[in-house]
Image 1: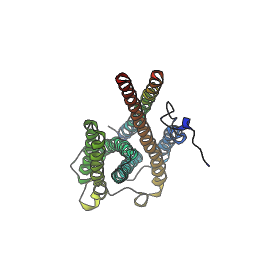
Image 2 (image 1 turned 90 degrees about the horizontal axis):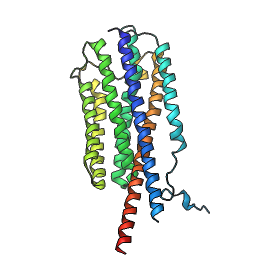
Image 3 (image 1 turned 135 degrees about the vertical axis):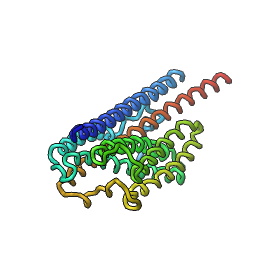
Image 4 (image 1 turned 60 degrees about the vertical axis):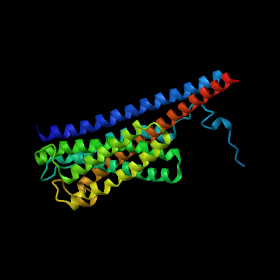
Length: 47
Length: 246
């Protein structure tokens, strides 16, 4: 493997890790927002 | 006199909007990262010994620095939690630990990719590599402890203790290249390298820093909202049970 193969491996891995974790966090926040909103609405309906 | 509208309290509103700085960082972090990485790849000259492999420095070193910062945040928030018993510190500690696990794992993987062409091996039981692997295992252990402890109070106290003890490993990792004879080079810092590499390192470090703050902020927000949803659910179930009894 050439030096540039290792360089692209390192940069590619960094991008994959940062992008994957960012996506995971965005989805987790969105799901938590929906859960909090859902619980709020359900509580309002029962009242 | 300042009056607070009941609508603005978190329990009354369906969902508090994300703070502006957090939303802005969601854009600033990736954009600054693209710019910093492009500058590092295109403008930095090859090293006289390593050649172009030197460019791995711009991802490996900032990832390691930010992993250390995440452990520092874990340490400070764990101490604050044990001192003040405020749940928010516990959540910051947990958010920091997750970011620390991601960044320490990335540091190890990048180091391995760099080690193969320069040392001839993907891995060696060198003091720096081994102590970093221990740091990674500590962060995974911290997250496992949180995942398997159900009682929230016990979970917060135990994980704060693990967080403090785990973060104490950071100075050992940092100083390992001085305390022991290692294959790993001495700490990379602007003072130990050629000025032509310093700008690339600094810009990438800031881009990583933006990501770190955003990671901790987003994870914290997710956990706060999850707790709010649980709390509302419990209140509702309690209300139903009380209503049934009445």
